[in-house]
Image (cartoon, rainbow, N blue to C red; front, side, top):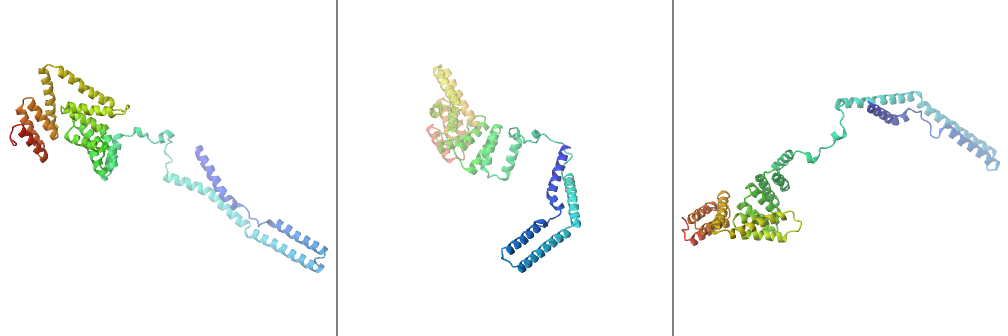
Length: 364
């Protein structure tokens, strides 16, 4: 209630400040007293001039008569103004002031009642404060970005913003598609290719597929020191059983890494894991060594059959089968490679050369 009283007082004061001058009786500029004093001074000046001999008595009498006439005319003009703007006009102005003082606040209240919300309860400042951005619903934000990108698929920046969100949400396949869209719109660079490859690796349950390897190769071509791409290429060599290549990449990463690189402990862990088993295998009895090597080859074969791979990976598998004395499995791997790489004439030519070197028919 207090606030309404305050508003009423403020409104009344504003209206009165505007209308108060209209309620006062006007006065002639300078007022009648000022005019009388002026003409009295003029008559006194005429007397002084006559005393000094500057005016004759006749001239002085004429000047006094003229000053008197002007004084009478001035008083008549003032009376005319006062009569013209007299009591009836004054009453009209005062009535208009009173009407405005009452109508303006009432009109404002009526407008607020019609279009405002006087019945709405008050809200504390904390309730009116904007929501904490950190507490915003992530799913709702993603949906808004997706709706925008559905209308503007060429917005590469939007895809680049959305892809890491997909990664954090575990939507790795969607993240890979988002990175591909960003590369199409903005062009490829080391970071975008490396991020695409990482999304593909996560979508493939940790397996560095041929598609992911191609992305990492492009990242390294753009920046030979790209650490993420180098790390996953070392992982690819590790999965292929190429222990020496994996160790070489890990060691190069460690040598070039800043001392405070956040990924350095992980690289050292992977390198230690590779170097430790190598000593154990070398110290194993021949039968155990053969079993360990066969396990690595079987892992490579399972990955290539399930995920596919590059010509280098298939070649490595075929040769490993031959070294282990498994010509039938080597031929099966060769046939699988031809099926997987049927659309790549250059790869098929290399497979033919491999088959010839193995003493097999080029087309079994």
